[in-house]
Length: 249
Ligand SMILES: Nc1nc2c(ncn2[C@@H]2O[C@H](COP(=O)(O)OP(=O)(O)OP(=O)(O)O)[C@@H](O)[C@H]2O)c(=O)[nH]1
Ligand SMILES: [Mg+2]
Image (cartoon, rainbow, N blue to C red; front, side, top):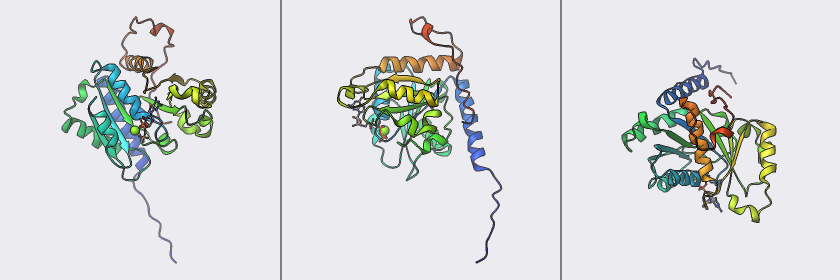
């Protein structure tokens, strides 16, 4: 059997990285914080985005691109609350820049979103704690959700995902009385991998922790646009951490 060598003339990954960096810079220039939301399936990504939209109640201009292998179920849940487009991967276990770019076009053409005026763009990734860790989606902030039912030992077992995430959001905290899960143990495990990770706890179901989550997002956006901190009694407690420049991880 003869062997044929194929020479690829282009570095596809480098090209995707370049497009991600360009998009990130464009969004930063417009004052749009791009948030890549990742987790295992069912940790509560869509529920948290629904709770976020409800809490802001139209006071913040947000839009969502939501990724799944199939169906538009998550988009249907979010549609009454904010502009949303479903991205279906047809089998791929993560989102990539070309699909995201198509989603952005559809946000404009189908949903009438003015990208210039958008304050927050959320990208809900496909539920998976492995593959999405390796793909830059032009985000300024990567947030990993870990629900109380998944076990507090997960950060150490999925290190790349937890190392590349700027914030860990522990979800479904209303279930804490019923499951063996320690918020402190999960936070400690995550900090062993990423010492500066921000840790928040929420229950999209009861609303607990949602105001603090939204305040964190607003804080991160103010850092992005270089706006002064607001005197809400919260900013003073925060270190002036530089916004993640989104360099390759
Ligand atoms: N008890 C409780 N259940 C929750 C909470 N948040 C979400 N759920 C439930 O968890 C299930 C999964 O929530 P989703 O929001 O669909 O999770 P997801 O991460 O978007 O799921 P995929 O997109 O499929 O990966 C649903 O049945 C939700 O009702 C919560 O705070 N507490
Ligand atoms: Mg979802």
